[in-house]
Length: 461
Image (tube, rainbow, N blue to C red; front, side, top):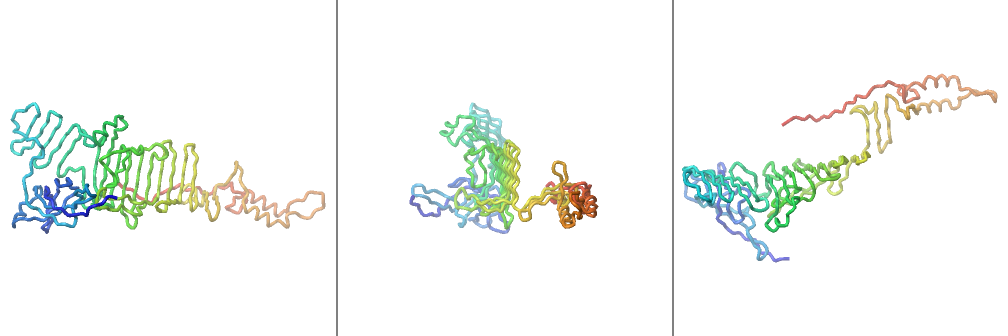
């Protein structure tokens, strides 16, 4: 194991822009765009070091120099700046004029264009546009608002259109948590020139759209989507600089919602060939994401299955429901499956009732109960091959007449049935069992309602 140095605190002067002032407080919110670790993912909070009254000159949009404390360390020989030290105070040293956001001066709009570029600009604000011979186009506004169209490059920066504006954001971050909200769309051709040289086949060039949106600054509630090459974008658990295809998923969506005492996560995936062509799963988050001090910022949660639906690309179906939410065990109360041949299997832990509607169990139904057996209820008759069946009431009647079934007669003549028994048999053989008869048939009965209702009311939002 490599020997590590102790972490140390190093003060650094960084460049930033004031975004707001905390109401009834001496603290300013500053977005740092230049530091030893680059642009910070979210704002920091700093107080002003200057003469009295200077705070009136610091308004949203003012460029300032800020003294920020960073942690520095790592393995010997590889020590580097790690992050902003969260417990240290930050101080605004003063304001300054930032240089132009482009490395080309936009000339007067009436100046001559040359062989290298075409220029247009306002003479007062200097806002304008530059088109270079290399194909790069810069659209610049006042301050640091600009849009850049740049050909060439590698990875996700190849043939890139990049826009910077205070209220037009594609990447949103909350720095203290290291949990990001992002949207990325593009084609990945390689992480560097060497990698790009090896990826020569069209199937090696992945295209996808990924979004990760936190509903608040807390990570308990978030939504992520991915369309195209499969790289599930679950916040800080995902490396978004590279794109890989571990399976052929056309669309995936993960919704994480904190609903104490349970955290619920819904996962939807579509496009993977085979029995997982469409996969929907509802899980309890037994242990949520855990923060760590450096990137990637979080570790995956541990989930317990509640519901899972899989539909194959050939139409096969697998449903598992009423899960116990136990991570690893995945015990379910219901399992329904249909294979490509049309074979249907239904397994229910507590029992199965088959009927026409929500209240038709007593009218026309089949109930299978592991504790009681199988019950068939029918008001319109139960038949096998078109023939009605004798019920238990017939055997009760037969047992009643068992000792007086036949009067005493002289052999070898026929022995007739007891006349009283014949009368009862003749009457009850055509009476349905619901009125005391022997047959499970021949009754008009009460027809089933065939009403299947859902108590939930759905409205648009």
